[in-house]
Image (tube, helix red, strand yellow):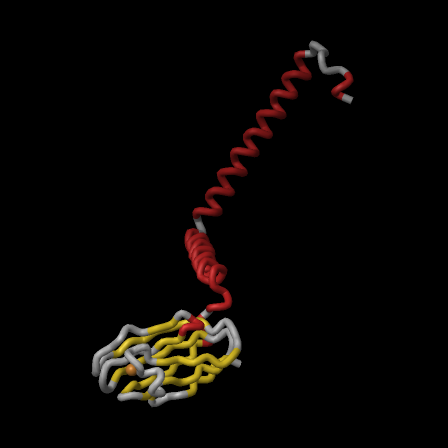
Length: 163
Ligand SMILES: [Cu+2]
């Protein structure tokens, strides 16, 4: 209805509009003030919320790139080497496990190597230790072995079974 007569030069009406605009402006300013005060009176809530947001973001950051590799399923084994064998010759895990090998060389010069998973320790002297980890992403039976000299042919081997 007002839009039908927008150019009416009635100063009275213009004044009314000005008043209304002023009142709306004041209400908006007061509302903004109350809103701000309300927020700043709860700094703890804000901090907690921020903390929550940050922690959930960090968790997301950890989860998304390696969701399958989450360390929920770390299977840990200690394998000792001597001349010319391992004390553990069968390791069984499930597909999706992260396998951790604590390799200890008790005697001689040996390593622990598993080609299919690109896993290997350094060649260690007696008394040497090394821990390696790899992700068992496929099922099957895979032979781990010592790559020093002819140790593999001499029977310095074992099997990783991924079910
Ligand atoms: Cu060896």
